[in-house]
Image (cartoon, rainbow over all chains, first blue to last red):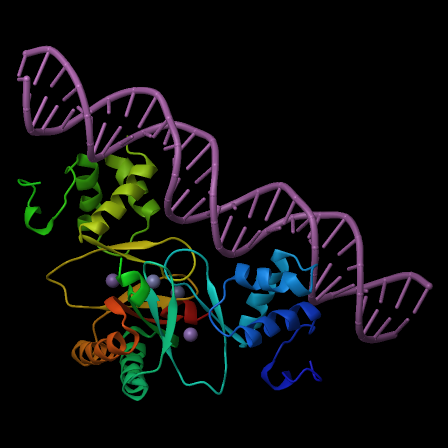
Length: 147
Length: 147
DNA sequence: CAATGGATGATAATGATTATCATTCCCATA
DNA sequence: TATGGGAATGATAATCATTATCATCCATTG
Ligand SMILES: [Mn+2]
Ligand SMILES: [Mn+2]
Ligand SMILES: [Zn+2]
Ligand SMILES: [Zn+2]
């Protein structure tokens, strides 16, 4: 826990293991939206031994610890992304043809204001305890648009 | 095609079959967000013979025709919803605990304005051809909030 | 050192969805 | 009205991502 540079963030932390560090390293190196298999493939070049189950388990672990976010963009496999405190609040643009994911942060202030108002209204109206929101645009990326 | 009350909407329409009508009828009866299995279970009470593969195929068919929308709310199976022209543009509130889905239409005008501006900006910046958008709130519904 | 409990790897199991394929149905045309 | 071909269907196998199981490993504690 302490001694890894992440102590502050954790509450009911398990052990900090080489597997977990290795997975986090992958996200540090190749920043983006990675599937479990992306991570697995990337790791087995260096540390050869890790099993795919450990990748799944630890992606979920890291998400619970707040270090990663998980996204289910339509079909296929889930994507994980590093939660970088530095980076601005952002959402996603997803190509329905090739699956490419693009981050964007346009109009964040306006969006957050709307989101906040909506949350207030909805939690009152439906007694719903809102924890997070997600906004995506779907369409065709520039490569896929040209047939 | 003609004679079924849907002719206007279709472009490269296939046959209109009893299976397709039966599936659409389910949505008319039990309006909401239904999984393939929900539809399958509901149908086999009346029309006994339909196979699950036909349900999947025709849900997809009806979506292509613009009669249904498909949603992948996180884990589990996809949900389909009837596209009702009468109804206002809406988005969803999803309970992360029990999976309950609630429609809402609060602040639609403000939202659509923001969406439009964002679309314009993003399609310019990323040469991305945006076709649709989705906005969800995740959290705990009133039943699930009380432990 | 022995006991404990979490973490791991191999692999089986699951659940949703899609693919395959033989059969049936529909409809335009002869 | 008969018929030929393409679309639709049902049964079922296959696929794909993810989760469950379980024996083993390993670090920590006493
Ligand atoms: Mn992102
Ligand atoms: Mn809805
Ligand atoms: Zn693309
Ligand atoms: Zn709930």
